[in-house]
Length: 330
Ligand SMILES: Cc1cc2nc3c(=O)[nH]c(=O)nc-3n(C[C@H](O)[C@H](O)[C@H](O)COP(=O)(O)O)c2cc1C
Image (tube, rainbow, N blue to C red; front, side):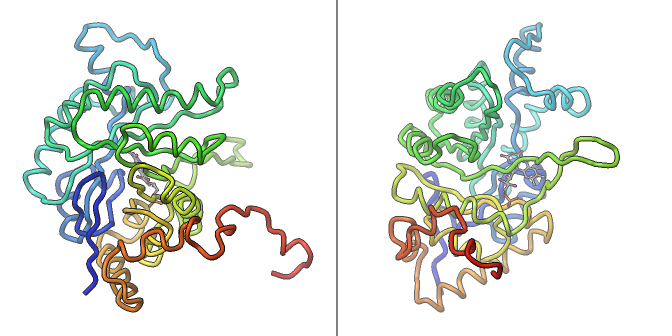
């Protein structure tokens, strides 16, 4: 029987499937179900930096929004945010730690390194096994250079690492002007892991109502190649663990991500679409494939098809459909 165990952020996981941060990881019951169905770890739904600063500023008796806040965050405050959001988050960590044995990774969504990092220590004290920082700076500010945009990520890691001893990972997007070098530089900070990549609401246009919409909340398997490409390119070129996320919907996709070089995979959409029970099928497919190839552990094939080791490494970097230009058929 193949050994599916792996290590991620210095934590021992029974297998590489992590329930990614989403609305499905926001309650003790859901977390228990993930464990019962076989998940290796759970990343909690993110708490937002703005929620932490809001609480802090409320406690100081004066809410000053002196740093940039996304419009949707203000909308969230007006409509959904509860005053005890932070307390509830800490309670979720404490209660989850009492009832499950798999690692619990807390998650903070942040866009600055300003004021909020103290809260990372509170999450650690509540029992979180690790902390995932979900960072996204939309590079659409015409006044900012790419260095200025990227500096935020380094500042955040530095500030948080000053305060916590638990492992810290960074979940990033592929919106960077020199992504390979950016990922490599991030891996050389004190960060313990990088999650490639987060996924965002995408814009769409309703041509009848002439309205802007958000679409594609969940992913499809067609989105797998984006993270597969970058896991494959970055394997052995980073100094931290790699988690693959986006478009992983079955055991085959997990095999591919480990072959490309991932330590673990993070999955959300497949659980929304097919339920948590799909984990058992994924694990079964993974171990059946390993048995068929004679691989006894994930380490036996991790990175075997990476950019560095594959027989045809150019496939990771070639973007143009050269051979399809000459004819009409596919
Ligand atoms: C409904 C929904 C809510 C999500 N909420 C969060 C979140 O709070 N924090 C976060 O880092 N990622 C969040 N994500 C992103 C997922 O963690 C995951 O990285 C992304 O969906 C790509 O994986 P997938 O293709 O398996 O869905 C969310 C995704 C979905 C679909």
